[in-house]
Length: 390
Image (tube, rainbow, N blue to C red):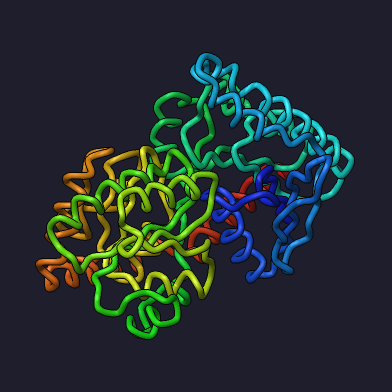
């Protein structure tokens, strides 16, 4: 089969939705299926990220107005009005969706399956105008009522975590399919040595290391981790924090670390993928997540697969990943005091920390695998094609 993935941000930055599409498409390609990607290419510049060789890239020219939305968010009055501050992004997105729809309509006599990341308007129109089967995946709950209306008129909706529960409750008429994320177990397993990993990354060997992996954006609330380390520093001198990622808040976070005098205790590493990311997990003792919201973060599954206990905020779909007292601990959003206490408690009881990590890895190996996710999607796509042929 030919699978066409539509992901507007794929050429600009890689977040949870983009990583999901890359992992799923890679597994589909390994099973002999043909992969294409439609993604945004800004009018005044090229895409900043390349796609893997196994897929065909189909860049789509459209205005890149997301930065204007970010600027409006910083204004005192307009920034508080969600529909107004998001208007530039919506305009640019509409151009992209219509351009993609036209290009797909030109190919409507070909046989392919469409997988769309989060664009409900495009998925509804494609369902109405194309003979091909259209699946839209929501990496988080729909933000506006118009999304729910579009989902009800789309061939099939894919979701997991908190998004699945929200769509199930708010749009019961939608053809909803649960398709979980997976983990690459050939990559994310603890086979290396902690000391050699720390040497490769330039991290201290003698410290207990808490690790965060993600984009430095407001929703990830990395400032909470800096406040947590202020508290930890008053209790123990042998616990450090490693922040792996990139994003618009990085400069501000680095300044906050300097202001608190924690530059020797908090280490910044650039965004890591593949083998480099595995080395980061290998070097760590604990994984921490401070998000104000997360639907079902794949980094939590990867960390657990690497035998790391997780201390995370109790938001979105995270409670369905981390079981308090079994694989880690959950704290309330923004509760840096409790986060600090849980980190210190794990440092004080290494035997419990190791047991939590072992249990977490066993659960992930049993429940999450990209091969099973791809097989489920192939089954859904095959059934829909057979139903259409009939």
